[in-house]
Image (cartoon, rainbow, N blue to C red; front, side, top):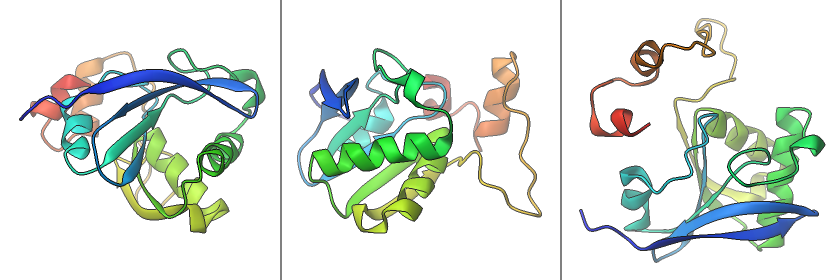
Length: 161
């Protein structure tokens, strides 16, 4: 796979300095990261960038993004992304969310469905399903955590995280 050029810059959203990673060509796609805060360009980003212009913001309080003091809940974070998408006139944009980012993407789609086109949820955390209780994610054994998160914990994507 060819490495696609990418860059990281900063934008201001509702008074908050937000780090944004971008790369690829084609229609825009927003990638919302997990609680792991993956803000390095991975093979997953690269694969998406073969077909889309990937826009991967760091949530407030992650990486070099500011504004965590204004976020008290997942709903506050979803409203932040309403502001983000509206500021950059992104309407009907595909959104890919990983873990926390998947939960956030669903909340965003509920708040403003017209902003979200296709929605891809990868290992969605935080969603409550009656017959599928959520596991304890806040553990310090990364091998156990990888086993819980990935179908193939030794696969190339799992080993990057």
